Length: 89
Image (cartoon, rainbow, N blue to C red; front, side, top):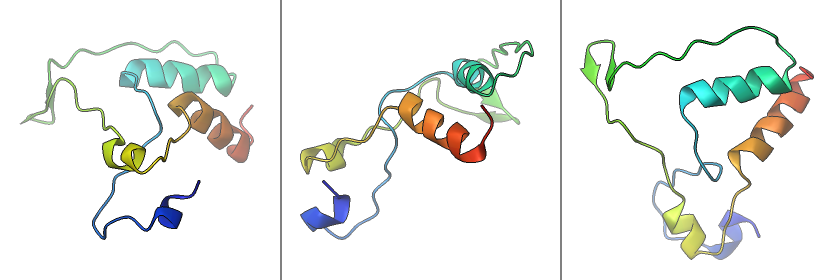
């Protein structure tokens, strides 16, 4: 089902793939799929980035889209398709 087929209320919708990972785990998956054999080091910034305090957890959910019956693929599925698109594997 396509999002616009539901004629959703006019507003801004932020749509993301389902699920979440820390940036470190996300990069590990990218390197695995792209067959890059480099070591990645996890950095704990304790919520700080560039002098700006950031929330420790800020993953988005597709709450409004899901209420319309829209379920997006997982982040892993989206990443696989993107890596395939870039021809990195």
